[in-house]
Image (cartoon, rainbow, N blue to C red; front, side):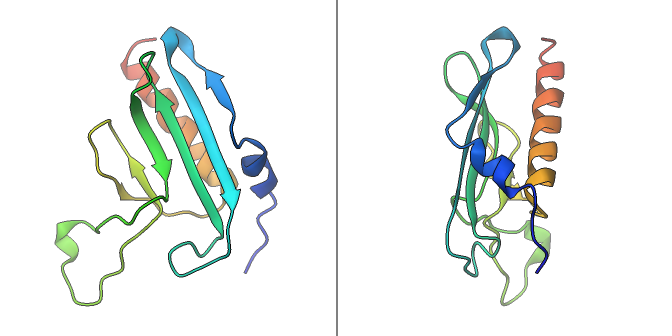
Length: 120
């Protein structure tokens, strides 16, 4: 297994809230856990974008299992824990966790995209 040299950056962001334009804000939660089948990389995380009323707009996390898309109906399917919520009502779609740097890059790219759509 390759060492993730960016992990400390993600872990250092735990509890951090960063204001965005128009009253939006992002929140980071990340901590190490023992690796398991559900969390093989040993990191629990929740990276979220909220509106000025505190409602989550988007998020990347691994707090619960997410069913694979319906097109993948087969016996022995694995439920993914790493996932992304693409909008407030999205129950989550699988997210392929590579390392902490990629997670942060993907999250900020999605934040930028959503804020741009909202024309902030």
